[in-house]
Image (cartoon, rainbow, N blue to C red; front, side, top):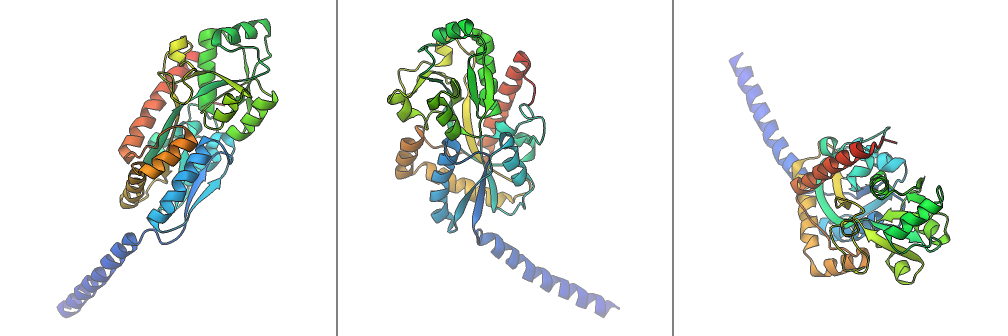
Length: 324
């Protein structure tokens, strides 16, 4: 009996010694197939454009194709839930603004990124801009309010995300603006609607709109940051115009399914961090998005999103915003 037991122990030890190198080898060879990044918005717009810039440079760094998969709709919850339920093997990620799918804004299918997803890295932060159709005879917040009072029910806003629309509600409550949100699946269709006059307003990040602002096809009258931005120095901040008492905007990042190994998360996070310091990438990213890239740690991303969540919870409570 003792002889048999010793043989079993030897066999188990040999088996374990074989398994451990194989496991290390498998982890060491990550990635060994294409990586998919799922977006909750349509092609075009800051989320899509910045994701493609990051993916194009991550691919050679990781040695595998990094594929962008657009799945717009339901306030990004379709994409968020697809990643939440994906295998935690490092081959599926979510990219975008975590707050869009938050329970603060969404009634059905919400995903709380602070507690349910695994952070990888923040990639950028940009304020929203309040943009008007040229059909609206207003160049300032005060003129917009005056127009709204003279024309109740005439201002429609392109609703591209729960976060931006809730901020629009906060602005409207503070300055006395009457508007109706109309859902659009991302910045590109919202831009088309704004230029055509199908809607009168949009609160969005600015890259898709800069050339149209400069050529006079649309009009920017404020941003939601703390100060004026270098790309549009003539546009005041909301704090400056007293239209809003807090600063906010779009924060994008990369997230993994819960349970994704820490080593894989660190590998991808480290590559994004290195990428954000590359002068050629910084120049390309800045030219395309109008902001500098960010390459944070996973903890850094989680900290920012937790702070955003606390801010939006306070604003939602104050203005009585209900999940849609």
